[in-house]
Image 1: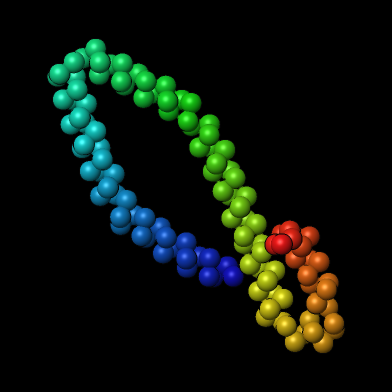
Image 2: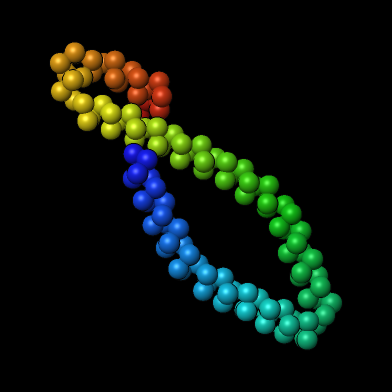
Length: 116
C-alpha cells in the first residue's frame, strides 16, 4: 500500500508541476497587465478593486483552511477503507474458512461506517 501511494503521489506531483507552473506564470503576467491598465484608466476604481480583493481573501482563507482539513480527514478515511477492504478481500479464503464474514463486516462498519 505504501509503495502504491508513493508512486501515485510522485505521479501527481509530476503532473501538477508540469502543468501548473506555466499556468501560474501566465496568470501572473495577465494579472500585472490588467492591474497596470486598470490603474492607467482609473486609479481610484483600481484601488477600490484591489482593496476589495484583499478583503475577500481575508474572508475566504479561513474557509479554505477548513476545507483542506476536511479533505485530509476524508482522504485518511478513504485510505483506511481501502486498507480494510484490501485485507479482507485479499484473504477471502482465510476469512471464509473461519466463518468470519460477519466479524469483518462489523470491523469495516466500525472503522468506516455503514455504506447503506
